[in-house]
Image 1 (cartoon, rainbow, N blue to C red):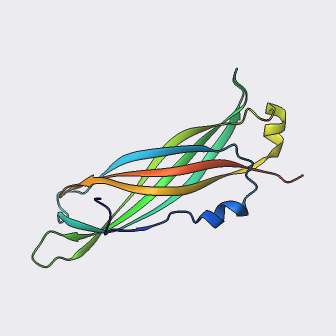
Image 2 (image 1 turned 180 degrees about the vertical axis):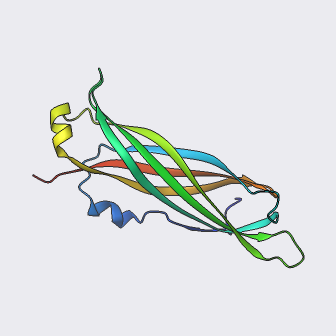
Length: 153
């Protein structure tokens, strides 16, 4: 596999999920994106490490014909450390931020209850997949889980 020898940091530990009051109304998703390295930077020989973090930046609850939904705005921060394709093989870094939007279906509870019981939205990174790269471009996918955090009553 292409990412066998690459260190990956930022995957949410499975024990972290139990710290939140999540009742199973979660949405899994993936974001695929391309990270381009400017030509003025040195080209990639190989990738050493991929570091990711995910943040929920905003959310809102909407009424729909199929029940309440939570529209989530989030961001994935990615840092990639790579060895340059030069005779000195120096280490370099590239960073990027990718915004995205996703939907959580919360049909199990009413709209009124939904607006009063959701405290926060939890996002966990489940996996990072390096899909490919060349001298100046890296394709990755981040698999995540979004869950509404409910107030304990």
